[in-house]
Image 1: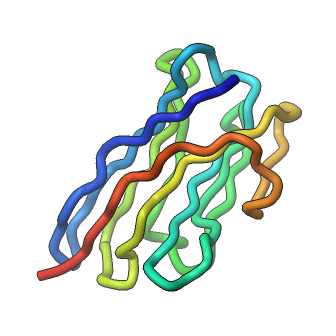
Image 2: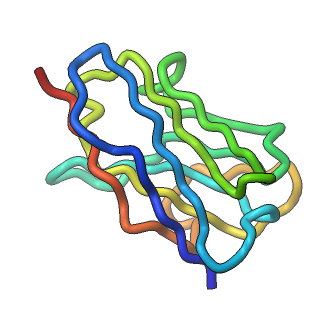
Length: 126
């Protein structure tokens, strides 16, 4: 069983930056495709970014492209989401997700992942 733990959320002013981290407890995530999703109050959970387990293939939602960057360090067993130029509409609970997969595969939908973290709150407000 893969347990995911997110960290790095908080309150930031518009235009600011945050870096979220996600690390599994109990085992390595080296062969897992990783993703970040977010859910704002009253809205469905939506895709933010994904990265293959090799790290060579990534995808980002159009709403965050050019501002957010997903990356991973398999040696440190951690995946990151660097968030720059934050906007109030980025306010949400951010979730890390994982699924065992092939070297360069990525996944962009909620239903494709079978492991989820508890989420970390990101609030963008002045």
